[in-house]
Length: 317
Image (cartoon, rainbow, N blue to C red; front, side, top):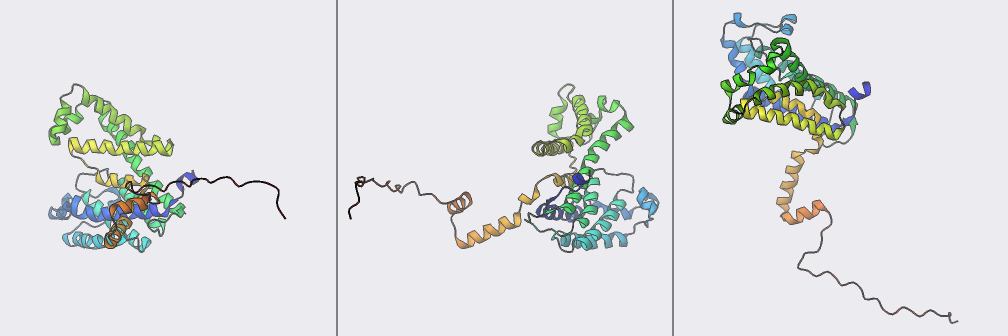
């Protein structure tokens, strides 16, 4: 179990995952959860902190407090995305974003799509330094990715458990998806809803998929990648039908992917350098594929014509 939890991964993968996670935190503040700043406009009596907020305890948010968290967290997340000071910046981002989430979820609605992201933010500071493209393997980085993967799968499994806990078997046979389509469905969802019993079959399928999601850890690497691709396709259908994105969860799920192979900075640097040198695209392709071959309009050199074999006889003095 210890070897599985700390399975070594390339440092380049940890660096890419770290950059992606911290960039998403910055985007989350300004794109996905800017409404948190408006929470302080309601009376303080409506603030009902989560259990962790009551245990610490955390103060009732004020406009000054929320503004300070926002304007401190935004630049720190961007700095942390560079990989500098991974422990200092990592712990700072985690603490501030954790408080940001407590404020967001303490007014009556708790989103379950942020568990994996929060676990990633808590684990990344322990991974140490990591440089993009570094093939050296690290067990500390492997542990950070593994616990994030576990949190991602727990999001699925516990969601299925909650469906049965609060909805019972009627969740699968009821009109859950039908109500969701009525509330926020798209034209594509309206087409699906017209197929008899398809929504009921989909509800059974969702329960089966979420309960069986831990099987991904038992699959070979090739099938594991295909299964993670299925996870992403499930969320693609969710967005296309009832416009629920689960963006934080999707970002955390990249912990399953070989992110070290994606190096946009290196690709951009090469592209700029090649354009500056004036290298033709065809030449670039030959450099990438291997040694250049002769053009089609230039005849290949004729093979040498063998001459008469030398006579073999006794050596003369």
